[in-house]
Length: 141
Image 1: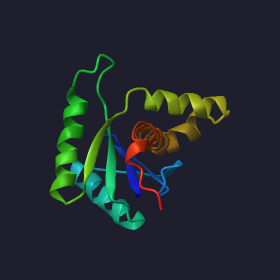
Image 2: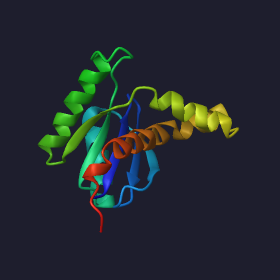
Image 3: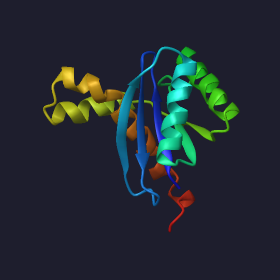
Image 4: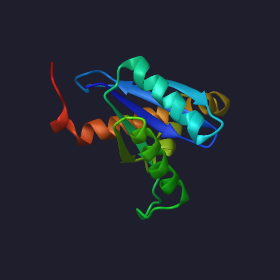
């Protein structure tokens, strides 16, 4: 099953995908967005482009697990996608952006270059975390 990982931001959206056996999640790209509808259009385009069967959408809860403004926006966005016929799962994204920054900093990638790809690397971390936690759902070919 091909999955599309999504890290939704206010101005950018990051995409990642995986192989059918869920062995590896890879970053796909980052797109600029102007609105939630624009973001939904871009998710739908990427979803169709890679032949995904489901979207794993980052769910930004605060460190205590409570739902804040961004979590509610993610819930609303998930509903928009579901209304378009795109199966969507919200997945905890706590610390994925910090982890992505750390990995790229450790690789000596400049801050300027990190900012160009941080959203897609975060989407990759979200998708990887989902796949690791759900290996029992993996469909082998």
